[in-house]
Image (tube, rainbow, N blue to C red; front, side, top):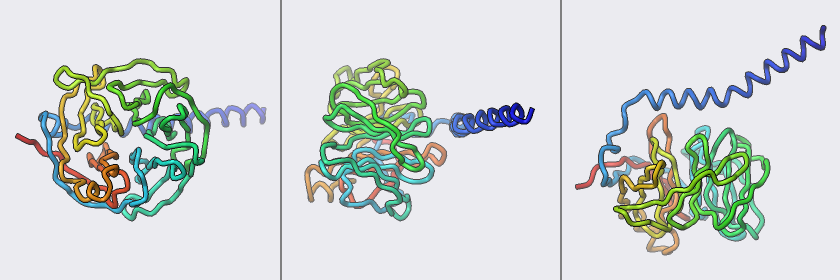
Length: 274
């Protein structure tokens, strides 16, 4: 009887623990879905205002940026300088850092189901970490190059430098579907870092001051954000230090951008353009 009691209790506690993450995600979804849409969604052309500046490691070649448990999760690139790291949001202090070997060039990263997924550029291989500790959990394979990565809460959404976004099953990593990104009927390539924001996919266009707002259902660009000027100083230092980081807090509705080796992360407010 004792064994039965403890076994039942163990199963109950395990079930509760396993449900905690989905319930937490559901609470966030309930909060965000109950509110009216943000004003910027009604406008196709958007500019920006800088709300505040936060410190950023100027040696971090940013390839992916997101918010997780109040901290930044950042994937950095470069052969011999690739890492996945947890960074304190306000101070910029690196809390945890996992380096990859010099034969891997890090790319985009995303969080889903308590895990961080990180792409690499040409190795056709990605890595999986625990979202809180960044302990290595495993690896996965894909075809072609890896550029940007985000999640809609169900699938991983991946860019590869082309005009296509691929939806991956987060367990099998099989391609579930693809969408071709089109602006005014013309395909747009060089899609890089991604972030899923208010039901849309935000995508950096490599070597561009633009962020595209993409309809995830069909790939149609429904808006363009012009960030001209925000990276002027960084571009003067090195033409490769381009805009390449988008992070969003869905509860506070705060939007952040940065770039490769920029000394700052900018919180911005989106404002309509004529």
